[in-house]
Each structure stands twice: as structure tokens, then as C-alpha cells.
Image 1 (cartoon, rainbow, N blue to C red):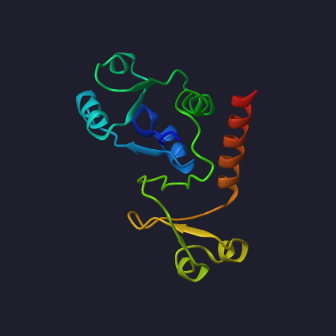
Image 2 (tube, rainbow, N blue to C red):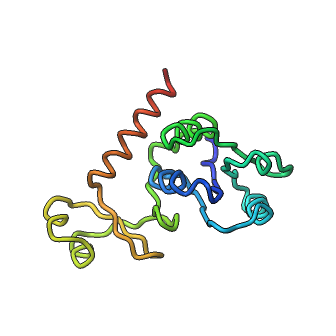
Length: 156
């Protein structure tokens, strides 16, 4: 069984980083880091650096993936193809801070989400680090459909 990839996205790939987190990839994203800081962090934490910067991607001593496309779906496809899809049991991570999410009850979510959400959803996840609450709404359906399409495309 191969280890799940740990990723570090450069400042040009914030949207990709959020989507990768929702798909279950451990993806750090800290805009404002210099190329030197990115390379050092990738090396220290044994992360693959995702970048659109050709010069940065040629740095020695780090694993890099040069992201070729500017289109999100093509970026996701490239990451899944070259680094592997997350394991089916991978849980989504916080799209804001990358922390693992905790399951919480409807009662615990009730003071954090609109009433209509409580009426239509029964499963909630919570980020203790940044206080975000997540549920599987229409955005989540879009994320899972996109991931399924990309996985299917990969197997063709």
C-alpha cells in the first residue's frame, strides 16, 4: 500500500489546493512564501511541491509537479494521474486550513448553520482549527461528480 501524497501548493495554485483538500489530499497552501521557503518546506516535510513556475520546478532536492494547465479540472486530472487518486476512504479536509475534519451531530451544528440546512442535511463535519462547518450541499455534489469523472477518465 503506497503512502498518500503530501502536497504543498505555491501561491498560483490556491483554488487547486482547496479542491485537493476537499478530495482528501493533505495539501498545504501558504501564499507569500518565497521560492526558497517553498523548497525548504517541501524538503523538511517530505511534500511534493505543486507549481506553475518552471524555474522552481527544476530545483534539485525536492519533488515537484509542474502543473501545466490553468484550468482547474485539467489540474486535478494531472495531479490524480501523476500522484495517484486519494484512497476511497480518504476523508475531506478543511478547504481553508487543511486540518482533518471531525464529525459533529446536528445538535452541535445547529448554532453554526442556517435552519434550512439543518432541515435538509443530517451529516456535518467541523474544523476545530478554523471553526468551519461543512455539509454535503450542492457544492459537495459538484466536487464528488468532478472527482468521479476524473477517476473514470483515468481508467479509460
